Every structure is written in C-alpha cells, then in structure tokens.
Image (cartoon, rainbow, N blue to C red; front, side, top):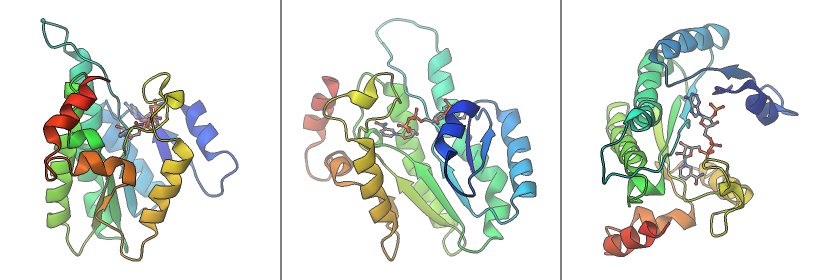
Length: 215
Ligand SMILES: NC(=O)c1ccc[n+]([C@@H]2O[C@H](COP(=O)([O-])OP(=O)(O)OC[C@H]3O[C@@H](n4cnc5c(N)ncnc54)[C@H](OP(=O)(O)O)[C@@H]3O)[C@@H](O)[C@H]2O)c1
C-alpha cells in the first residue's frame, strides 16, 4: 500500500508492480488519519509495516516577522503525522507477527541546514521520537530510522537533476542492501549520510553547519 495526496503519482509508482495498492490521504489533516487507518486495517488485516515517509521542506527567512502557515504545515506533516499514524496503528501492529515501523528522518536531523530551520527541527524531533518508540516497543514491534542524505528526487523542484545530490537509483540500491542485512540495523545510513550523522561525535559539527549554510 502506498499513500499520498495525488493519485496520479501513486499510480505511476505502483504501475507494473504486483500486489501494491494506491490510496489517497492528506496526513496534514488529522481527521483523515483516523478514518484512513481504520479503512486500511479493515481492508488489509495482515498489515504489519508502517513507513512514515511523507514530508515537505520549505526555505525560511527568520530575520523578519512572517506568516507561519508553512512552518506549521511542516510540523504537522513531518512530525505530527508520524506520531498520529503510529498512535492509530499501534494496537494493530503489536498484534501482528514481524511488525515494523520505519520513520524517515534526514541527515539534517543531525546537522541543520540554516535555510530550512523548521524542516531540520522536525527531523531532529522524529529522530528522538524514534529512539523512545524503539525502547518502548522492544520485543513487540521493530523500529527503524531511515536517514537519507541529499537525494535526487523532486522533493524540492529541480532537485532531481541537482549535481552533488545522490542519484535516486544508487540510493535505493544501497538502502535495500542495508535492509537486507541479516539483522536489520536500527538506523539505515548510506555512506553519503555518515558525515552528517556522525559529525558531532567526530568533531565536524561546526564545519558541517557552515558547509550546509552555503546551500
Ligand atoms: N530527497 C532528499 O534529498 C531527502 C533527504 C533527506 C530526507 N528526505 C526525506 O525523505 C522523505 C521522502 O522524500 P522524497 O525525497 O522522496 O520527496 P518526494 O518525492 O517529494 O516525497 C514526499 C512524499 O510525501 C508525500 N506527501 C507530502 N505531503 C503529504 C501530505 N500532506 N499527505 C500525504 N502525503 C504527503 C508526497 O506525496 P503527495 O505530494 O502526492 O502528497 C510524496 O510522495 C521525506 O520525509 C523527506 O524529508 C529526503
């Protein structure tokens, strides 16, 4: 099952694949989330994996007063939606064999890019939330964090051809290899993201903040 707001994009994703279904939901709308999860469990009672992937990223200028609509939407989609979806599905997931939750964070959870402060904050928060979730669900549901580096998708318009960003195919291949490891790592980290993930531990934090500041 893949979900998002635009059926056209979802249909493109599932085209030619077996046994994948597309369904629309806007996770920015808290009222849709409850109804959506009830429908999903009724239709797919064997559902045992939740991947919290939906996200948006906006540039923000903090030096003068502004409308906070986009910042609040970023928090709702990137942070509140995974918390809400997990909450709605948790009793069901605990009742299923081999249940897993995957939360998609970002390298920017570990080193902020100064032009996208609210985005970085939601990703740092989802990292922290995932650590607690993993502890509380130990032995019941596996909890994995997937922290991508900058990847060539249309996350920001034009990004899919941006030089220096990781090609999508290479990212998927390396990510799937990590998932296929005998014991799945609690954090899925392709090589490219390790500089950010371990910047603080390795004494590179200030250098990394400065480097990202030029993006
Ligand atoms: N690409 C990167 O460089 C990068 C780096 C680090 C982390 N990430 C993370 O990876 C995840 C996926 O990003 P991506 O690169 O694959 O970009 P993407 O292609 O734009 O994917 C974002 C997805 O989120 C969905 N979405 C956005 N708002 C939604 C809403 N209100 N309700 C339901 N679905 C919603 C979008 O579908 P609709 O628009 O159809 O709703 C889209 O499928 C995000 O969490 C992002 O933060 C990406």
